[in-house]
Length: 43
Length: 238
Image (tube, rainbow over all chains, first blue to last red; front, side, top):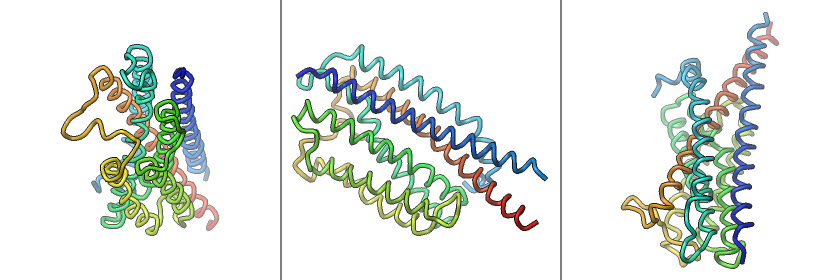
């Protein structure tokens, strides 16, 4: 059995999962902090 | 510990620390994956599939470590009423669930060429699947909390009770007959050859740094949501 597709699949799934987690967390943080700062600057 | 109870003081540390954890973590994981994929020889029995070790094992450690973090934060929340404990427990839940899922998926991919099966209902795999479902339950409970940033006492109690599963996962390969191999790395030492061990440690450290960076980002988002909620309430009252 050729093992290469299994190795590629495992690394690819991990890369996609980790990057999606980092990106979603970063976007949520930026959005929330920007809105909080915006509300703070309003009278 | 209560020195960091002030969110402003915590944010003063968390803001510069977030990129300091994330970027070295990403670079370390990329370097460790390159090392593991291109420089490590095939193993005598498992052949090239042993390279899945470099993503599967860190994911398993972080899945289990994440829940241990939730349990510790839940105890701190209930006993000392530390205001950031509930925020940190909630921030750990999603990355913990993601790494538990990655552990299950990469383990399944590894199982097909190694065992001839995508899945077997043995102690290790089943207890890890239970951990993933516990994460989903905790996330649902935390989201249902009345407090926007923190979690309810019910979620905190659930976080402590769920920690019973962590030693079960760890000891499952000893207590029950398992197709999963026994622990190769213990407090007493390692049975893994240095050629595999060093890239594994580099990968585990890199993923841990990324995990820490993600938890800080999610805590910052939750603290910002608390500020938004408080501000909106004041604006509505004016």
